[in-house]
Length: 384
Image 1 (cartoon, rainbow, N blue to C red):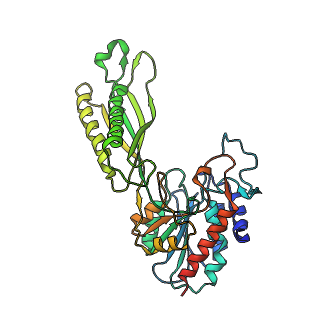
Image 2 (image 1 turned 90 degrees about the horizontal axis):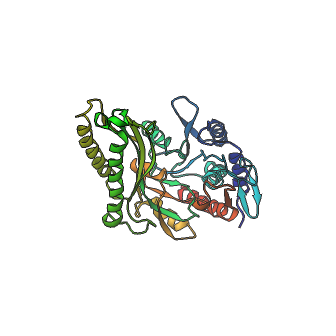
């Protein structure tokens, strides 16, 4: 089974844009916009603050509701990776297309954009929307702005398909995630005068110890959700900075931690517990220095996804897919942002997540062909 040539052409073009998240995505977005407008799409743009990146929503057909095909166009860096071919040139060999983003997730984007003439030619009873976003790979930073823009435009689809690589199986749920920075401010002193100091690292260590305790508690007694490979909430401290000399009591310490919580968990509970500990420690610290303190700053937040199995988009996707396996995954996607907006959402796209972010990233031609068939089926379902 071979993919549609239109898909392969679109994928070649998309891979050719170096849309590593540190770069602008406007060349890619401008190409996609022109391509869809040439086939009658109505497009809307949502720019970042300095207008170097943009989200785009294109609409085919009229009326409320409809289905949105959503994908990000940014990719992860190739720095330090040993590629056997140019990562920004689509290379076909051994039944695979190689290139940065081939799997995550320009393969899906290419199928969606390759089939644009079909949306234009169909007499649709509900619209088809195409959403392309920026900065997914650095924490889903673009999608909240697109959701806010869609609300202001009065656009609320009745279903959403996010095409992250799932080997063309339906993903019904994923964990949510939070990333926080904790900054502990103490008072410096020579290490021979520790009694006059407020040791920021030691106070930070007490919070880190609680993080470790929470991790053990969640693993041993926390909520369980069947179907996940790790069926409980996890938490870890992942970066730490502090101190500027072996004989100086440190005045500043910072660390980053993240937690991945199962659907149904209350993400505010964990940070609430840590903020309460931080407040108690800050009170103790201020007995020595009124300027001392503990501050938590949220760096990122991705909601958990729990698809509505009774929704039309869920039932339609499962009916159209050849593989009826339904999975739950530990990584986050933009689908949960659509879900929070009130749009029933699922995740399904070509390629395996095992290939994402690696050197010689690829998507199989068979996977693209399955996605072609899937998108064809959605279009058929939406015809009047």
